[in-house]
Image (cartoon, rainbow, N blue to C red; front, side, top):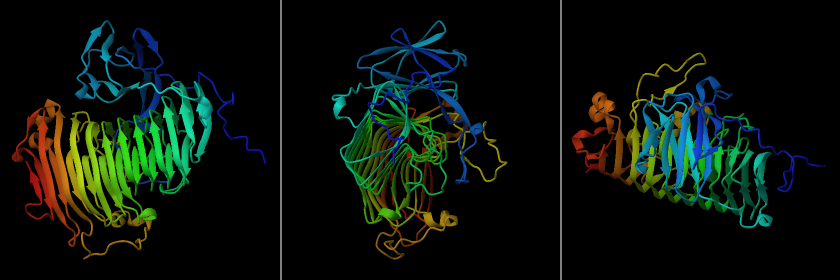
Length: 504
């Protein structure tokens, strides 16, 4: 049998330079030369629902733009908006980069001195422009690469990787396909090009199985490196690692996500995972540490997320749970990240199963609170529409609870795993030794007038009588560079013993 769909990297077929849609909203110039500006799709507002058996309507989405730049020097960027008034409120994020801009005729001019992901906005988040200023990643030895994608548009479909495979994307490569591996090791995926999963449709409810892939799905793999590559339009979770060990995700870009359950990065019963310098704009949760019944024998340990730019449209930004089928979560850190939009919670722990979650650190996080961030709404019926476009949602700094995962999703008919701790067992659904420190909130002044102390919120709930919540510490919360005292933070708690939460 001849398998004509197998993609070989030297094949000249299925390649063109004109198939990717261009943006109608912006012209962009890099050091005086006009750059290609492409279009992608994102969610228009935070309107979500339990998987109904079919994908979201595109009338709940909108078009965004992006530029894919590769540079190793300071560059001058000029942006000419075509659909918005240049006299509006100009935002170049992350704000922590302190980018100074000027109006020059009908353009906005500024310099980028660092590699990374940026967002250009006028007045609100609609019709935004992603600016990806990528570190150059040349291909050292093309003959040693298993899958080599040169400049142009490619259609390989689902790429099943084996041990020692290497995938390289040229900076001008746009690849309609997704990546899959199981029981493999020593896999490297790198370059400055982009994978687009829009050719894949989601059919089943379950996302854990391989029926649907998303941009990247790896099972039982080790020694993984994903560097520099972009991922867009995923059918489900964008990048998911199941029972994987010793993985580095460095400078990857997740953007243009709008379909249901498009979490950014999910690690499921993994160990020794390093996520750094990444840009993640997800429709659903941004970076999540989960525990699944499939791998409940393996604990979640030694996970570090740092130096990332995170944007969560719906849900949680830095999340542990809701599925926590593992005996322990230990040594998990989120630090030095810019949160451009935090969903409903920035630092989140949902111990929905039975884990002993301990020694967790969230530190040096910078969070934007904007008046135009509208509230999350769950769609309950087919005819329901989003009516909250003139309202505002304030993201929580911290939320910790242990509501039962299998009760919340009882309609799925989930079984109880054999390894589950039972009520009365030591540390049943426990959360202890959690530190949240150096959280800087940037708050639009209009929000301070409207919400006051409600701009800094903490929520705690211990819903399991036999569980232990202990040693939860919050240190140094700043609002517009002013440190907040305890009375300036809104704290809601239930089932929490006095002295469990310490705020300094």
